[in-house]
Amino acid sequence: MSTPQVAVVIPTYNGRRDLERLLDSLALQTATFDTLIVDSSSSDGTFELACARCPRVQRIDSKDFNHGGTRQWMVEHNPGYELYVFMTQDAYLDDPDGIANIVRPFADEQVGAVCGRQLPHLDATPLAEHARLFNYPPDSQVKSLADAPRLGIKTAFISNSFSAYRRQALMQVGGFPQHVILSEDMYVAAKMLQAGWKVAYEGSARCRHSHNYSLGEEFRRYFDIGVFHAREPWIRQQFGGAGGEGLRYVISELKFLGPARCLAWPGSLWRNAVKLLAYKLSQQERHLPRRLKKNLGMYKRYWDSPHA
Picture 1 (cartoon, rainbow, N blue to C red):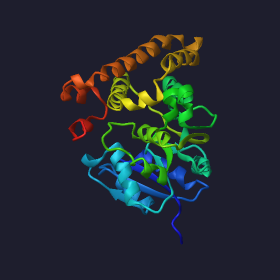
Picture 2 (cartoon, rainbow, N blue to C red):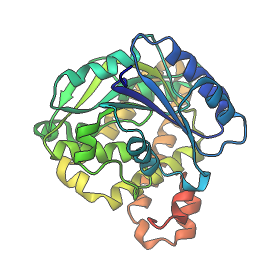
Picture 3 (tube, rainbow, N blue to C red):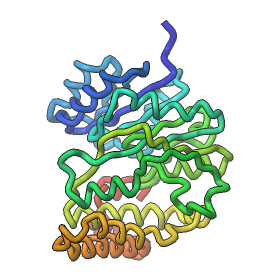
Picture 4 (cartoon, one colour):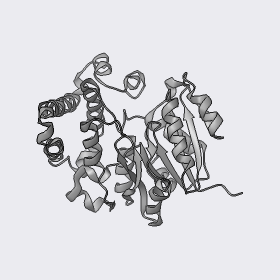
């Protein structure tokens, strides 16, 4: 039997319940693919569940996990696939055609990466629900570097929770980077666009994925995002900034809440102000002590790595 050309790669860590839900959704898919799991030494039964449900499971020490490095390690240690679909353990597919739909844009040989649509989890808060509906619309599009003046940094938008990559394009741009704190997906998409590849957004490829972040978690998340952009200034230099996207987001969120939920407006404005503060602060991260940055950010292990 020949090796299937599509691999679904799932990094896991202490997420047994989430992984079971994801694997159940993968079992219902109409497409043919292999499922590859890399577990970071879970202690809650995640590894045991993975081994029971999936024949291709690899284990690493939790201290060795790296957002980009671990994903690239899986690509290099699992050759023979043309396409790699990456999902996070806390996502799951919304219908049986999710995998088939996310690989469809690769029929265009110039497409190097595809981002799927994320719908909010059923228990999402109104703010978490709006975030997914705003950032992941139903309409599909294929983007090239020529779209940067119109779309700005959104040209390179992609998410590691549900995205797919052509191996040829991925390896051509050097693979997923090890040195970034997060957003290894955007880094690769931007490199592909620079190299002449296209990046697609496929609205028909749907998964469920969202976070009910606390205010503190929002701050830490946006601090890490800001660190990424501060250390990779070439992305904004090449594609431009958000171009007023932040203001459009705030207005959209208030409209989404509507008069019926007007009591939530102050909290919405405050939360967005906190995110902006975290992002602006992290733009000056080179002047901050490492211990403080570790406390301010979400991905704390990064600051103990040689890349910090």
